[in-house]
Length: 171
Image (cartoon, rainbow, N blue to C red; front, side):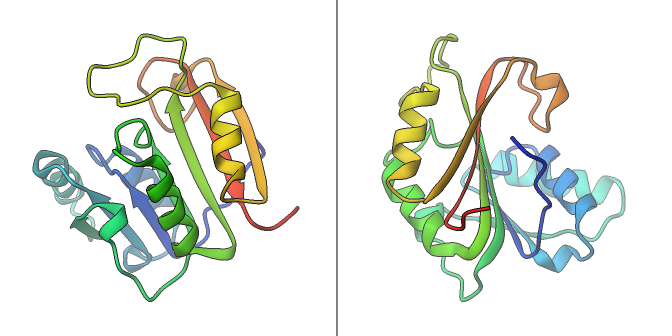
């Protein structure tokens, strides 16, 4: 995937323990331009504690399903790492992301590679082809890559993942 500038405002779907949230925070000028969502109380607590630990002002951190999230703002960047395989309806999630994404914004996604052992809480798996096909149902511009070493990327789960950058503009 080509380098993508993180443009504000930013929405992170599934902040987990806050590691990616912290990286996103360091890439933008204002904490008020970052919203992080998760549905797990423990993840929300860990994310808030991470910001408190360093004395940083915290972005907006909300307990909310993306499908229920309401915003009058369109987001230039939406980040959803290691989330899509957990949701009940991946099509509803992508539809909501499309609704929230600015017309020339980017949605950045990662999902585990299908051939690797799935976790018990994964409701589905993806191949590069199946993810590509799914994303093209919602977006005009899809770029797929495989990460063979997550230690080189922002998500560090120690397994292969499929990375995608999607948008509606053609570059």
